[in-house]
Amino acid sequence: MREETEAVREARALLDSSPGLQTESVFGQESILTPYRLQLAQAPKKIRKAWYDYALRFCDREEYLTHSEHLMIVSRKK
Image 1 (spheres, rainbow, N blue to C red):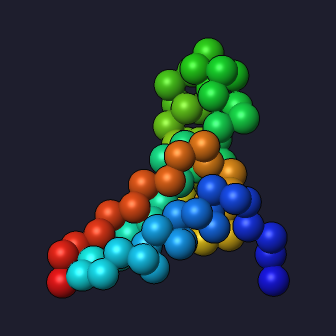
Image 2: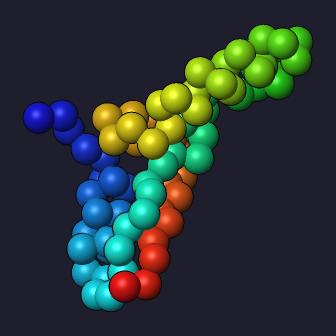
């Protein structure tokens, strides 16, 4: 089993302790691109778009949540 960061553990605990809410989606806002944001900002638009499209394929995959600085948790009231 993979090791989770403290932030992911805290987010899971928050979700589990919220009665009446159903989690619809959890995703990393920056995804796998966070370490490269400065380089991407200077890249041509075509290159940026290719990387953004690539990152979108992984932003909601649980095994990549630890690569993001911020988690977005979308829940619905039951």
